[in-house]
Image (cartoon, rainbow, N blue to C red):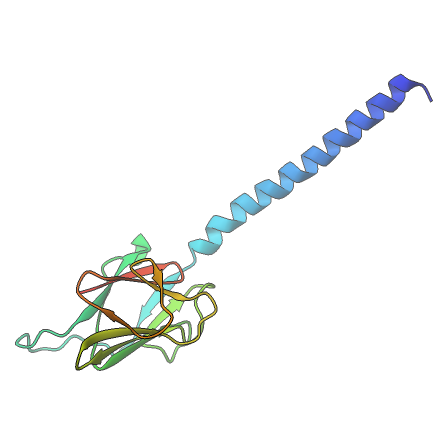
Length: 150
């Protein structure tokens, strides 16, 4: 074979390899945002607002994703957060464990604890390694969901 034909074959093969990688990158680019956007939240019947407003209970408000922003969950003793239907706050998010985190009222205030989740729980962008005290304005992140304590 002549050198010109070999060079053309090499360039053609190189073009095919680049085309293949471009297609793979395009597929990944399109698939990743759809996974992050699948987080949905369901509110359990057990987390009703009290009828009396004399004693204000602490609450957790979803800030992100924007599709669920503003959902309020009052902390009455404790709230569990996870993918399981048994949780008080159920998140349909692949980055959330079935029993992911707990928000509990203690004599010293609110505590957030990670329940051995795979991806961790974050309070004000710091990973939770044990029970962490939170106050009004603290942000708790579980998977792609960000909640604010009020």
